Length: 82
Length: 82
Image (cartoon, rainbow over all chains, first blue to last red; front, top):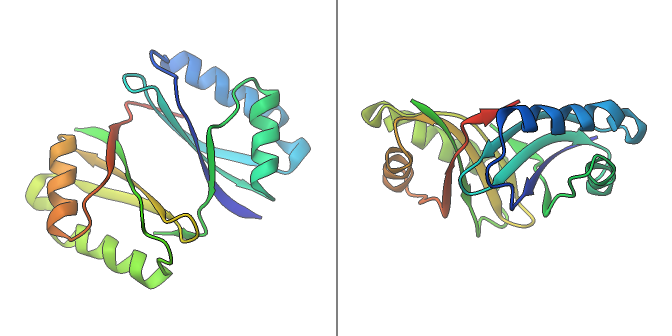
């Protein structure tokens, strides 16, 4: 398992409810790929959303995000954390 | 106070010790701008570093990062979090 930060662009105007719903959609199926989405942060003005997850691979993260309806634009492993 | 995610590019090869030192350099002076850096995540391969902070403004975040020697390439307010 490793930690990943993924980034979504183009989410201008996202609301708190929409972020919660998107996160819940990930959580509902994440176990099927051995992923856990820990947190997400959104900037409705610039439309960027960051998601922090623990997962076996970036591909596993993307498969969950795709099936939940919101493909990530970037996924970076982040092995270092402070 | 608001929450911010800032992004640094070009940090290829960053080590765990270097990330800790950079974070400590921020923590040492953050109070002077009313900022608190909560966490940072780094991908040594692509050279991207994400920092999560609580601060009065994006400018305050940047002033601390600049004085600590690592100007951020992007700073986004992230008012929404799950």
